[in-house]
Length: 419
Ligand code: UD1
Image (tube, rainbow, N blue to C red):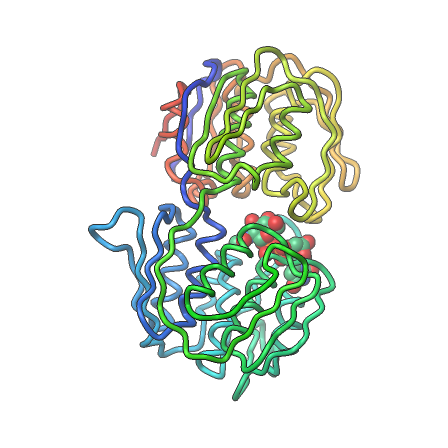
C-alpha cells in the first residue's frame, strides 16, 4: 500500500491547474445511462472513484472507458445496458454509485442497488433519494440490504426534500429526465455540481429550469441523445491547494476554476489574514505572516463546504488564537482530529464543534488517512510542520485527488509517494 512522505518546511509558490471536478464527473457519468448513444466527458480527473464508476457502468452492460487518444476523456455508451443491478462490491466502496438508481429505473423499468452502508463520516441514509423516486411513481422496496425500484413508466411529480441532498437531488433530476411530464423539486441542493448536471441534461434534450436554486423543474419523457461535455474545475481540490499554500505562508495560484464557486472558502482565508485575488478562472492566495484563527461552520452551498472543513482545520491549527470549527452537514466528520493531534495540534471536540487553539508549529509524525478529505488535511498540516510526516493509507486520497503529490511538488513541496 502506498504512503505519502512529506518533509515539512518549504513555502509553496507558483501556479497549478485544478483538475476536473470529481463530484460533478460522477453524477454526469451516471447521467450518461439516460441516453441511447455515446456520451463523451472531457476534463475528467484520473482518480479512483472515476475508475470505480466506469467499472460500475460496465457491470451494467454499458460500454464505458477512457478514450485512448483524448486526454482525460471518458466515453460512455449505454445503448447496450443489460443488467439493472449494481454490484454490491462497487456500491460498498463508493456511495456515489447510488446515483445510478434513478437513471436505471427510468431506462429499464427496474433497478437494484445495494444500500450504501454507514460510512466513515457518519450515517448517511438514502431516504431522500427513495422518497424522490417514489414521487415519480417508482415502487421502492428494501430487500436484504438492496434497494429495488420498479416503474413501468415514471411520471413527473412534486418532490419536497426534507433536507437538501446533493446526490439525492441529482438522482431525482436524472429519473425526472425520463419521466413523462414535469417534475418539481423543492428544497433542492444548490451546489454547482447540481447546476452542471442540469447543463449536461439540457445537452441531452431535457428542459431544466432553476438548477442552482432550491426549486428545480425538469421536463422529461423524450428519448435522450448522447452529449459532449467538459467538466468544470474541482472547487474542493482548488480550495485544498490554496489552503496548502497559505498554511506554508506561501503564494499559490490555482487556475481552471470558477472563483465564485469558492466564495465561502476564499472569505474564510481572507478573514484569517490571507491576501486573496480572484480573476476570470484563477484564484491567488498569499499569506505573508502567521494567519489568525477563524470560526467556521459548514453548510450546504453557498455556505462553507463540508468537504473543505478538515483542510481548513489543518490551516488554523497553526494560526494565532483560537478557532471553532463546527460541522453541521455530517454527524461524524472529525476523524482527522486525532491524527492532527498526533502532530501536536491542540484541538478538543465537543459534539459537532472542534475547538482549535493555534500552536506555533506542528511536528511531523506517522499518521493515517481515514477518508478522502481527512487525508488531504493531513497533507496540508504536514507541509509547514517541522520534520517528516508519513501519511499511510493514501488510497483514500487517490479516490479524489489527481496526482496530488506532483501538483504540490511543482509548487515547491518536498513530498513523495512510496510503495
Ligand atoms: C455529496 C458529495 C460529498 C459532499 C456532500 C455534501 C458527491 C459524490 N459527494 O455527497 O463529497 O460531502 O455532497 O456537500 O457528490 N442525507 C439524508 N438522507 C438522504 C441523503 C442525505 O439524511 O437521503 C443527509 C446526509 O446524511 C448528510 C446530508 O444529508 O447529513 C447531506 O448529504 P448529501 O448532500 O446527500 O451528500 P451526498 O450527496 O451523498
